[in-house]
Image (cartoon, rainbow, N blue to C red):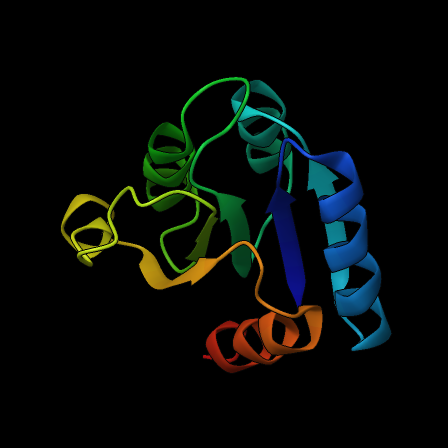
Amino acid sequence: MNVLIVESRRELGVLWKRHLERQGAVVSLVQGQDEAVEHLSDHAADIIVMDLVLDEGSALAVADFASYRHPNARVIFVTDTTFFSDGSIFNHSSNACAFLPAGTPPEDLAAMVEHYGVS
């Protein structure tokens, strides 16, 4: 399974990446919209784990690009804010499959990736 992590906080992205790699996933880590779009232009992703609030760019723009470029890729949004806490993220992003708090334990995130990454 190919996983793309889009996370501005490098240390958190690395933590998730290591955990997913231990589960057997092939994981790429980028930190913003431009890097994510560049990666998705050249590589397939089965699932994208993405912080809803990026330091550079827009997570919704990345999700939109992914839905065009890789229509079967699903997005797990992660955040430490209350944006979209009402579940409306699913109305704004057709490829959203989950919405988790940033403090979700890595093993739980890995379980979600495995669940949604298998079609």
